[in-house]
Amino acid sequence: MNKEVVVLFGAGAIGEAIVRRVSAGRKLLLADYSEEKLVEMKKTLSEAGFEVGTIKADLSSRESIKEVVKKAQSLGDIMGLVNAAGVSPSQASVEQVLKVDLYGTSVLLEEFGKVMAPGGSGIVISSQSGHRLPGLSVEDNKALAMTPTEELLDLPILQSDVITDSLAAYQYSKRTNVLRVAAESVNWQKRGARINAISPGIIMTPLALDELNGPRGDGYKKMFDSMVTKRPGTPDEIASLAELLMDRRSAFITGSDFLADGGITAQYWYGDVSEVRN
Image 1 (tube, rainbow, N blue to C red):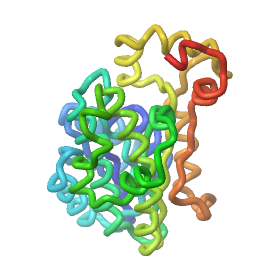
Image 2 (cartoon, rainbow, N blue to C red):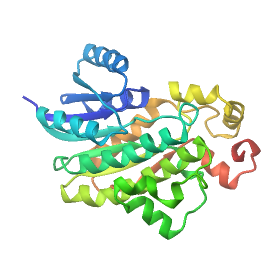
Image 3 (cartoon, one colour):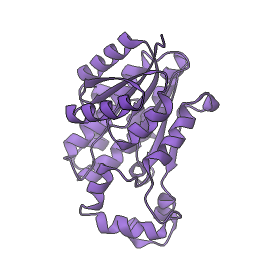
Image 4 (cartoon, helix red, strand yellow):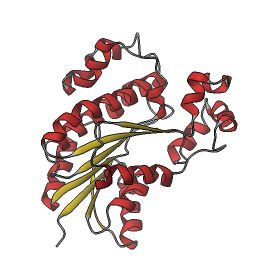
């Protein structure tokens, strides 16, 4: 019996696209806050031939994450971790974004870094938003990367005088995701495992639709004309990259972040497109 396990946090379109590519012949454990989403995704993947288990989980809770780790270990050797969970700035408050996207991802990296099997690999889905921040100081980068997780939210750079709205909270969270992936990869290497991040641009998912229909939607839609693709991305395009990064073909890659955004961040910093910068 195959005892290899893949864990997915976040029962959404990007996560599903990734696990379809990396979970064949393995046990797949789905973790999400929404029981409805878990039931729906389990049905879809089970009918497609995957061996699927589920567990309700709260990414903002260390105890909840530990329960997922415990269940995954009971199934076998944890060879894959995909974190595609999170909240969008149009859906959540500053506090929720920081607690879920920043703190929760940091806990996830830490707890799974203790149990990954040799040869295992993981992917954190971050965002192009993390690349929209100006360069931070060496001291701030180190603090976001290496501060003990339970002290992260007390950092001066994450207080209300800096984080003035949920978009800023999202940007700092996603920048921190990338920094924590790099820092935690050092610990993952001790177990012979790898962890990388992908920072997608606008990908057509329910979360993206919320953004496109939100207050920044008109600007996002105008961006498409400036992009090489002239369109948003698809979950399968992100999954193709994730599949490569989780495969042995990428054994030389860990602690890295890959920006996959149709060129829009390059436009933001170096182009002449006001919609992008605004």
